[in-house]
Length: 233
Image (cartoon, rainbow, N blue to C red; front, top):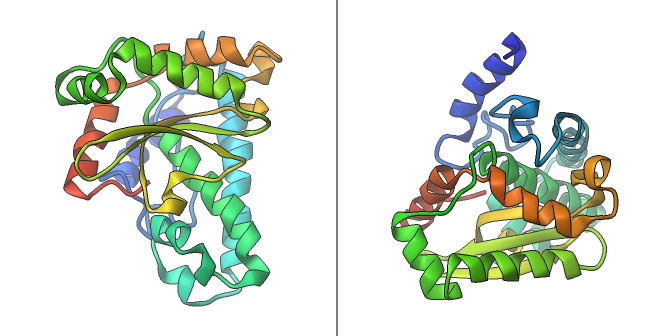
């Protein structure tokens, strides 16, 4: 593994601890990718990961930071609170904040929950999935169908509340359930930049392959954090 990536992994552990972004750890900073670009192959190719993180996510952070440079009380809030209170953001920058803060939060979550070996969830999370979706297979089918049928760019999310109840939703563009005061357990990016180099227009194939790189230990940690009220992005 390249030394640059090793350094990224070490920094990522601190930046992502607690599943939130504090002001030093990243409200206006790009979190490092917590694994090598090639870690998610063959489901997601390394070049897509590099472009997605280093270009697309970085662009959202830069534009979010530019909007915040104009100042205002809203810039002092953590990322999830900014997204939950968009009406308090000045109208002159609100659209930019919606898109770019949303993109920042969505991608920060996205990197966290990948890099694993797929498989199935276990423990309390597996019980919650069976309770709220009938079975893990039912969740996969519903999730994949939601992503494949989503018109245009956007995301598919599994949400979680403080009682551990799960839900399934899609959002357009870089919108996020955080804007509704909800929390995201995990989600998949169905913008073309997330899959087009490898899959072209075969979004359904990408959605099916993506399950093979999920890190269920990390997702289970997010589930427990949500029940403690500690999950932010």
